[in-house]
Length: 49
Image (tube, rainbow, N blue to C red; front, side):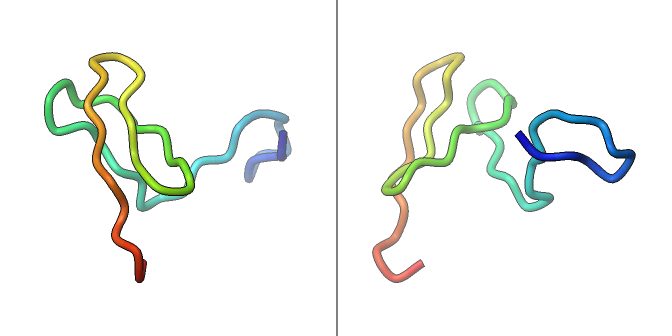
């Protein structure tokens, strides 16, 4: 875990995170895909990105 701007311990999220188009929650970022833990929507990452 990292510290946020206020010095509190916790998860630090990037500002440009991907949101699920189906249910609107933050998607998990994996090495080759983005996935939603709530509804199961998965989107593959592009190879060059």
